[in-house]
Length: 268
View 1 (spheres, rainbow, N blue to C red):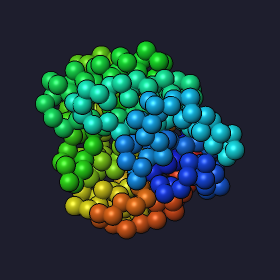
View 2 (view 1 turned 180 degrees about the horizontal axis):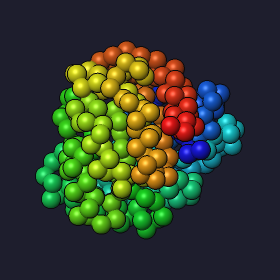
View 3 (view 1 turned 90 degrees about the vertical axis):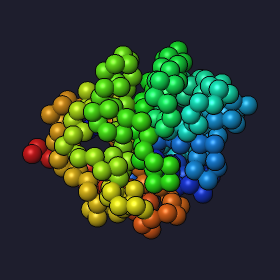
């Protein structure tokens, strides 16, 4: 069985230790740790990790030990084309290495493509220095528009041309951007991690209760199996997302996890 984590996005507002304990009590063995500049979205800030990396790593280790949760991967929020965040990202990579977290997902940028390719190449090489695999996630956000590489053929072209780049497939962003699920197979070759949630294309429906959106989970799992996907999954519902459909992020995380387990165990 492939590893399935729950994003700490669903438990925003709780202290880190309590969030991990809740994730474990809700039936998950793994968590994906969100690192974000805003405490409204992440349990740790990259700037704080840079100031006290040992203290930050100690907090996570203690939370893991007390809850029985293991951190499987991390989502790292970075502003594009801000030079001083390179130092923060390097500190984050050291932090992830010390915690034996090997995948860091960052969002693709929305600016000039040449500058973005240079930025991602630099961050990819910096992460590799610490044994961390950088995974780029194309995103669709209603307030800011689509990132680069949101269309599967664009992402495939980027990963093919830029040797060594890997991708995180986010079903919510791709569905919200209006991409067709059958086209996602174009990027399976470069996928190392998957963020799962249901969504629709309509404004405000970047996350909806599982079963109310466009996600065909059984078909996705079948196609991943055919492609030989051996990576991990994170169920990623966001608590406190005030724009769009109101839902219980914790409940939906559990429902989608159960459906994913059933699909993975199915022989058809």
